[in-house]
Image (spheres, rainbow, N blue to C red):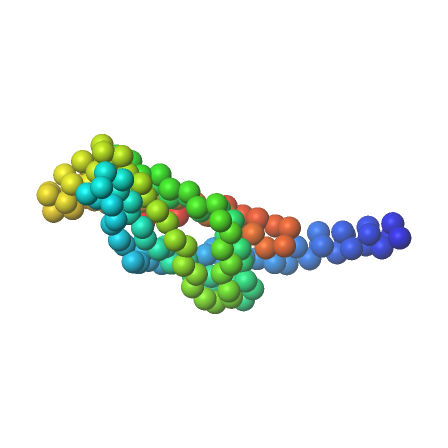
Length: 144
C-alpha cells in the first residue's frame, strides 16, 4: 500500500513539470453601473473579463485590483469567491466598489478634468489573480 502511494506521489511530481500554464489575460471591464449615489451609500459595480488561453480549465481563487488615478489610489477591491474559467474561454468576475467621500471627490475631479489628459493623470489599475489547477497554484500580476 505504501509503495503505491509513493509511486503516485512521484508520478504527480514528475508529471507536474510537464504542465505549463499560460497566464490568463484580463481582457476588458464591462457593465459599469453606479447605484446609490444620491442615497449616501454609493456603489460602483462592474465585470472584469478574464480569458483562459490554456487547453485545460482553471479556477481563479483570489482576485485583487487597485484602481488608480495617476499614482493616487481610488479603490482597492478583492473578490475571494472562486470562479471557474473554461479552456480557451472567457469568464466574468463581478466586482463592487464602495468608494469613500474622498475617493468620490477624486473621481469627480478627474471627470471634470476630462478623465486626465496627461499620462500621469489617467485611470489605470494594478492587481493580481491566483489561479489554481489540481494541487498547484500560481499568482499572476497584471496592469491596465
